[in-house]
Length: 392
Length: 135
Image (cartoon, rainbow over all chains, first blue to last red; front, top):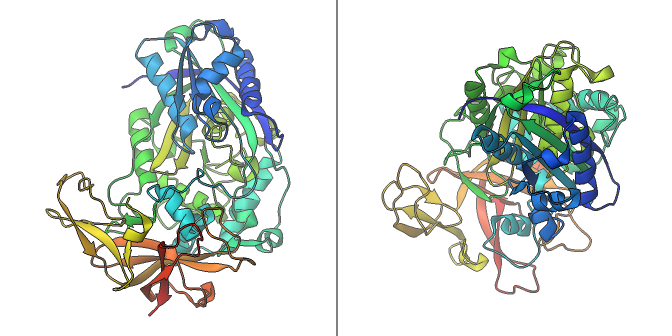
């Protein structure tokens, strides 16, 4: 499938710890996106929700739940679940619906409220579930993040100071983001003296969870041609699975068939390559990227997966200042997950909101001047992930 | 994935995996439905005992208690975690490291061997889990 869809409007509920129902955040974000798009809810023909597993049935059918909350008006409803990539899959469903010619206007919504502490598996005694099995063994998410981080230190000489530099950069970005949960600068000593969670990763190397919502109004090119404003286009979304042989441990599995070649293309690199090919752009064309910094170490891996630098050179790229606002290719101008916190059903859509604002030139003190092309990258358990290319 | 007690053989102190009859790909936990190598697709796999030893690919530890169903002892004591590559099988197997070996003792490339331990879970008396220990 080729062709572009237009991001007509975006909106968010600020991220934090608000202790409200996920539907509140979803409706708030949806109304903000509709207002931004200057579109009436009654004109939306397709609503695509990202599911949450934390709110029972309404969460499993999030698209229908938000449609009900906004008032049933006959729109077709869809819900997508793809772990932390759910928002990207909900976006892909809406894009496909538009490109298939079934509708001109779609609303994509993700909202969630995540309990504090480590993410936990579904309840019950279910040894046949890989997600149950790994927690039984004691392998929570930070363990996987730390295994990847340590491997990066071994292969490329990364240091905990490098990981801290990523966090310090993102903290500086987040100060300027009114939607971020954490808006405070951090020093090297604050990061390196924070509580050890999973050696070598400390509290400030690992993103927390949050409550929040994000929404996007998508339109066909034909519809958008009637609207006069600076338009952001989505030119590609890739959501491919990994290959049978992987290059790293994959959450939530306790074992993987490891690729013989250490430098075999990673899942993330394959996602990026497919998205670039479909969009007809390359990493050299990018102005900005939003990636999942589940840990500060993981952001360094993304530089290489996305082709922002050759493999093994991410630390150099970071230290050069290239990935900070004002540098050659800023990464996570929103502050990333480090400042936002994980809102599983919404975080992929929050990236689209941030990049749309960047491409419109509407980001104020965190604006990347002249931003023209952007990529958003996600990862999720059970082999999920996505790369989305936006241009103006 | 079968019941936990079927994943390991406590007498031989090894994990039980499976191997494809055609392409000889190994699986852990044992795959029984079909070979997951998309270039193979063979339906017949045999249960096999996996190698007891391998080299550390990466390692870490858990400094805060994982949530349930992890069986937490009081007080919680941090434990090391290793990802160990079984060379012959080309399987990277994750697991906790035995209690008396702290993360500071581990190095990438270090040889580890498998230990089978009874689970501390009161609701699963016959459950067994695996741990890694330096050779």
